[in-house]
Length: 147
Image (cartoon, rainbow, N blue to C red; front, side, top):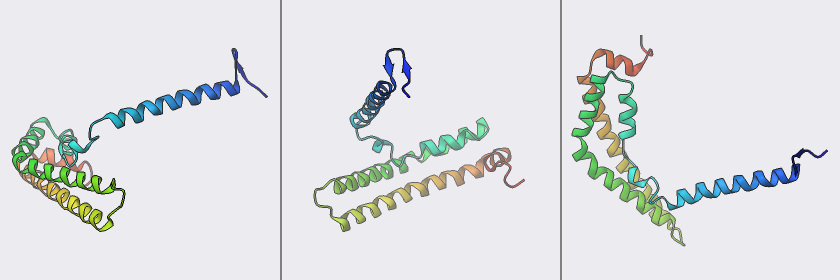
């Protein structure tokens, strides 16, 4: 059984669909390839987490969270830069022709330790914020979990 769509047969339709899919995939891969250092410049940046939490808070409490996070930027920035450098090192080691597994494992461990330090700063930000925001804001964060 052959299906026809105007002058196109089923096989030609499949060929056209395959061609369109390949062009779309090629454009996506090309865009990702040309993007400089893909997401490394934002690696270890807790801004998205802060903003996600802020959306669950009343406006005044969200502002307190943002202010507390902004106040920690002088401490966070060097940690973030060190984390990105550690990630770049793991990428360089991964891309070598001869994989140095012990060096790669050490670099991954170093990057993880740096990420943990960033996480500790973010946790401190949240703890400071929880002590300052309203009871309503704290309850909104936990939702209906403990009512």
